[in-house]
Image 1 (tube, helix red, strand yellow):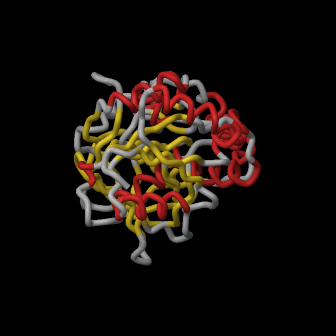
Image 2 (image 1 turned 45 degrees about the horizontal axis):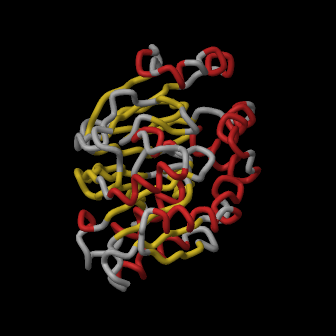
Amino acid sequence: MEPNEWLVILNPVSGRGQALRHQAQIVHLLNQQGMHHSVALSRFHGHTIGLVSAALAAGCRRLLVAGGDGSLNEAVNGILAQNEVAATDILLANLPVGTGNDWARSHKVPSNWPGAVALAASEASAVHDAGLAEFGDGSRRWFINVAGVGFDAAVVERKMARGFGPLAYMTGLLGALWSYRPLPVRVSLDQGLPRDAHIFVHFAALGKHCGGGMLIAPEAAPDDGRLHSVLINAMSRLEVLANLKRLFDGTLPSHPKVEAGTCTTIDVAAPTALGVEADGELIGHTPVTFRVLPRAIRVVVPPLA
């Protein structure tokens, strides 16, 4: 591939199949913007990682992901898992087609496709921090928005199993709430003294939003070189339901059972393995260490986003 050629990756599952159903419309928009491109279809979970890796080896330096946060996560992993090309020499753009689109929401990427394609064509870019999750078995996974341990992963697992569309996360949250029990964990920030806690969920955030619009880290910035740690201690079901509004109005960090701050590493271990999610995808189980990789990747975003 030529360096100025865009690889457009379509996820046939994102947005309940929108990218695949409207492939001709997407291609028309690309042609209108004069974007030299080729199209690849992501055919199975994890396929985008391989598609990106192969494209970069073939000379590609511009990637447009037509999908949601999970598709974007796979593209980030394809970029950061290789060492042949500097990640900041690669342009990564998103055409938000998923059900959550939280990364696009945080960056004010246009939700309308003509606007998002025009933004990609402009190649207006900025460097962006990345997150790295390292597991006890030696495996690792990068993320670009928010990772979570505990209840959040249980919700993602339920959502993935049932596929509820635009209300997937909230429906999964309410369904999982009745069976979930907070479990003990040992948490350490920046390799400080570990402490024991019973958590509802612990977020490691680069971005502000997750779960289809929840504003869990309103002070987060994608290029500040920090992880925003948001730990929600154990709550009863009634407490969770009574505070759902806080998930969306930016007041979550001020709740008395929430501990919020910034750091560069977060270690989480538990006597019983807890699920770990990143960018809306299940990626492993505790123990896990989250790290921030400052200004690790280049993304196409609106100016002054």
